[in-house]
Amino acid sequence: MTIELDDSGWGDPIGGVFIGVLRIETNEYMVKEIEVTHFQGPNFTQKTFLTRGLELVMEIFRCLQVTLDEPIHVCRGAVLDGVREGLKAQNYQVIPTKIEGKLQELVEANFVESLGRLGISDIPLVSGKERFFRQLEWIQEDLKNREQYAKTGWKNWPTKIRNWKPKWRRKQQNLLGQPLIIKLGGSIISDKTKRSKARFDIIRQLVSEIASISSSPIIVIHGGGSFGHFPAKEYELHRGGRSKRKRLGLTETALEMNRLTQYLIEAFHEVQKPAIPIHASSVIVALDGRISHMDIESLREFLRQGFIPVLSGDVAADTVTNFTIISGDQIAMYLARLLNAPRVVFATDVDGLYTADPKEAPNAKRIDVITPDTLAQVFDEIAVGVAAETADVTEGMRGKLNEIFKGLPKNCEVLITDIRKPGTLQRIAAGKSVPSTLLRHSS
Image (cartoon, rainbow, N blue to C red; front, top):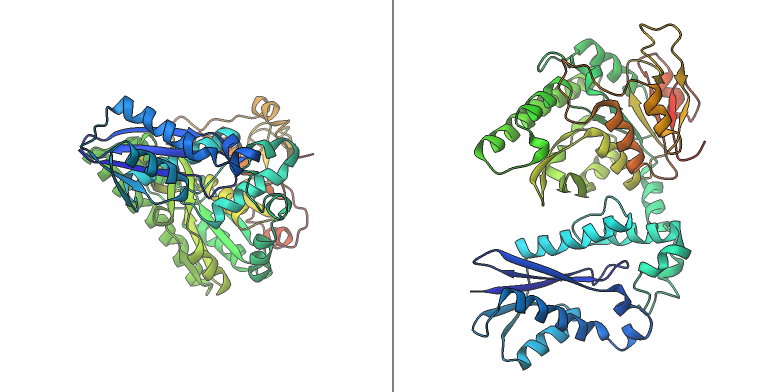
């Protein structure tokens, strides 16, 4: 038998360090956390994390009944120096190496899950600058109460990191300009009651309005409508799985979503506006249904070159459930945070949310502003489900509102409105008010 041993969190400013052990042949896996207190104050200076790490590894070894004749492949990271030396002293066959593959993914997932429990959302699974600075942003939002979760023993914590401000992200935005993110509802651009039926007249109308904007970069995201939701619901793809039937269902859903995206790209081409598809399934890794990492470098570059990137809700690889469905709503809010977008527009066929269907109830009242504090009341006032004859795996309006507030950055607002009326989108891009329902953090 062969044992692999890896860590995650050593280079992250928040939380402890997770140590995972995997027996390759049997897939037996256990993980333990070196508590964050070992990376604070005198504990860090005295490197108590080295002895604590060895204690935790020995606990795992006892549970897994690891024997001396099993080769132990240990990551070369400095946080595991005590583990390597301690295991050698006990006559284990220690082989320092670079750990990649399944164990690395498992331990990283455990660490990201721990950040999620603290309330840090949308953390990339892959360590790096984006994950690092996302944690610092979270600390700065409430430094007084959140500093207790930080690795404050780091030498440059009190002099540099503690006082960090998100200048790097602002610098990137200055080079690019703040984008306007437009989410086209699947029920607007397709007939959700009929499988794979596009509304080409509406698509052309919306694209014409979007193409008229030249004051800021534009990102378009569309929902699945009757293209994605039918196969996704039929194969229950939001639950993940491993069977061949599920995998074929995944392929079918991806094909249908690509068809709808292609219709939008063709419409942009007709009005001579450069647009490019960015397939979410190729750039997103999910963790139990939530975006864990999204590679947006190509999207940034296309924006700089004057293209309109077009994305959609899509299937995505998931490190917990194998694959999942990522809604266009989740993608829109994730990009809003990454790109510091001041406004996200959710395009519907009415100018906001109403207490009843305004097409059938003349006395229906529009809800002008929704905040987290008023969300429960809104759910009581409006019909939040979807029609019985439609297929939707993203929970209708209730799911949409919850998704928006789950990912809404503090400096961003969301408008739910009808952008088909000429000039509406231009006013939004200019920062002017339009008839709409506004979603933001405060009233």
